[in-house]
Length: 197
Image 1 (tube, rainbow, N blue to C red):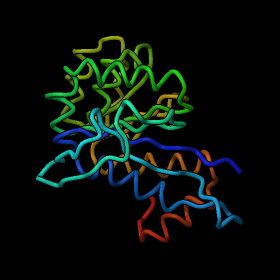
Image 2 (tube, helix red, strand yellow; image 1 turned 180 degrees about the horizontal axis):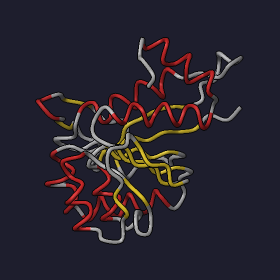
Image 3 (cartoon, rainbow, N blue to C red; image 1 turned 180 degrees about the vertical axis):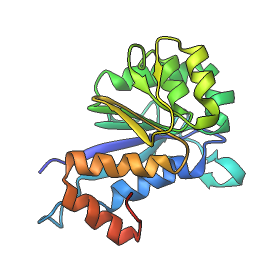
């Protein structure tokens, strides 16, 4: 049974549920008959590794910086005000996302994290989604992307994008089902007292 290392990118003004939702789902998931090894080891990473301040003042200490982060099997790029106003103009962040994508099994986004994947060129020629309020921005800034509206997530194989904020939870459950199994997805939802749609 393989354990996948999941890295969640953090930055100032990141939307809290964008990263906390997938963190919770993937951290709780387990294999059907294995208690010792979890399917996912979930860690966080920021550019400098220093404390970040998420939306509404929540302070979070990342596990790694770009300099000491391992290669991730799954990368999750959340959104929020910081993504669409600051990090989209941060060349170090965009270059790091590109570099990680060379070795990830899956590169994913939540909400306006799709803008960062778009800036990195990872969505060109693909279908993708984002928060409903950023559909037009994604379409206008990245015309090679086929923007899909009114869906929770879009799975394009290696690249998976999800809609706004809570949609990241739905995408995380999709990853559990895809990589561990439907039964484990249902079991994880039961533990969280989360109603699967």
